[in-house]
View 1 (tube, rainbow, N blue to C red):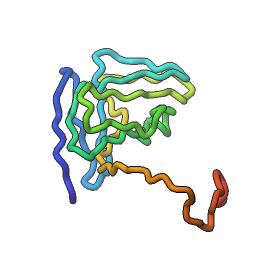
View 2: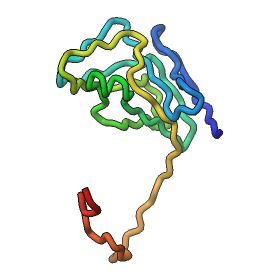
View 3: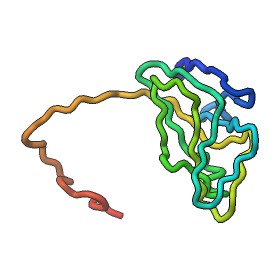
View 4: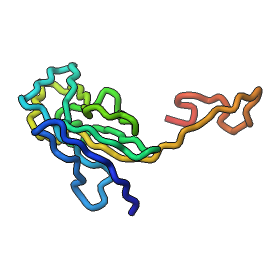
Length: 147
């Protein structure tokens, strides 16, 4: 197993350190750090504070993704899934949640609202060329390889 060290700075008393829920979990749960309940009306987006800042190692990112439980039961997801937290960001981590459900959703303090995966990042450069190599797919776009 490969592990990286992430520096964690608590910014709110209500913050909870992200944690894995099983030995082989890919994502760690993120917990809301709002001091009062936040109600997200149907169709609305709310920024939910996590109450901490972090320093990722160089060449890593944090991918923020929906939790399958609240997504499938209540229609609560991220409008930008997956979201990215860059290695050089030092502000408070927050999660934008959108309510695609049929009724308002209340985010309580210390509720598991999303998951975070720490992943390596490879930066690319572009080589400007006149022609690209040919492939069987060619210019076939959306849906060109089947349903």
